[in-house]
Structure formats: structure tokens, C-alpha cells
Amino acid sequence: MLQRHRDFWVEHEIEGIPLEFLNEIEHLYHTEVVRNIEEDVFAVYASFQAILRKASWIHSVSSITSPLLADEVKVTVMEGRPAELIVTGELARRLDDEPYRTMLEPPLTGHENFKMYTSSSPIRLGLTVTNGYLSLGLYRRDTGKYDATTDLVGTDAAAVSWGERLFQHYKADAKALEIPQ
Image 1 (tube, rainbow, N blue to C red):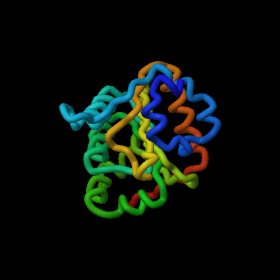
Image 2 (cartoon, rainbow, N blue to C red):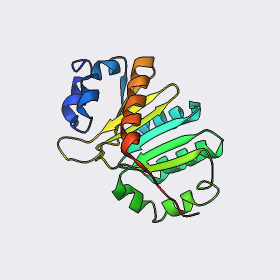
Image 3 (cartoon, rainbow, N blue to C red):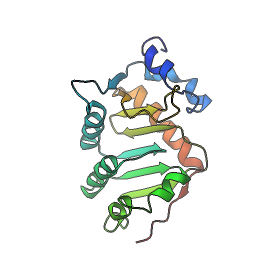
Image 4 (cartoon, rainbow, N blue to C red):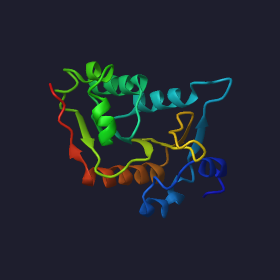
């Protein structure tokens, strides 16, 4: 498995993935690496956007966000598709600042299909799982920063199931985030 996407695994911190899930990494065999390249500098974002647009529901775990990503999630929720997000405490505090504060204002915060949680465990990855997709991003080994230019994306049942179990792993220790309405 590690040889199939050798560059991805070598370039990124896999230590952010809990050991029990590293032991099942073979479930990601049929994934593909999506990279921003000179001819398509928004390949990763376009892939994420396409995944959300096809989703019946979204489960996400992350220590990072951007206004573009947050807006895509908001559009999905406002279209009536459920989303559950698990974030770090640090990211939760940043969501109280602009532009995120405005994005979270009603009707999003009062929407029954939208739930946010704060993880009590450290998060060193970005994971989005839907009914038909897995998208996994990791931190780079050489910089220690999240790599927004490369994601591992899969559509097969094994990868999606692996991602959903990882989401549930983080959710088990997470606390509901109270967002002022």
C-alpha cells in the first residue's frame, strides 16, 4: 500500500493518523493522489468542491480551514444536507473571528443539519468523508504545515468506511461546540 502512493506517504506526517487506523492503511489502496499543478493550481479545491456537491452528508475532521472551504460547507448545509465537523480547540477559537463569524451566523448556526464539535485529541490531518467519498490531507514533513496542495481521494467502499471509522474515533471524545446564535 505504501508503495502505491510512496511520494504522498514519504512527504507527509503519517503520525497524525491514530495507530489503529495506520494498521488498516491498506483500505486506502484504491485512492488517488490529487495535486495542484502548474496547469491546474486549484485541483485540490475543485476536487473538494465536487465531493461536497455530490454528498448526501458530510463528516469532517480538521485543524485547518479557509473561507473558501467554510463557504462550501455552508452551501451544502443550506441545501439541506447534514454536516458534522470536528475541529481543534484552536480552530474553534478562530471561528469566532471574521470572516467565519459571519458564515456561522443564523441561519447556519440554527440549522438542525449542522453540528460542530471540539476535539479533545490533537488533530494533525484534514479528513472529509461523505456517503461516496474520502478526502484526506496531511501535514508536510519538511515544513510541519498543512499541505493544501495535495489530497488523497477515494470512492471505493473500503476507503469511505475507513474514513468514517476515523471520523467516529474523533467524535467519540469530542464535545459539542456551542455557537452563539
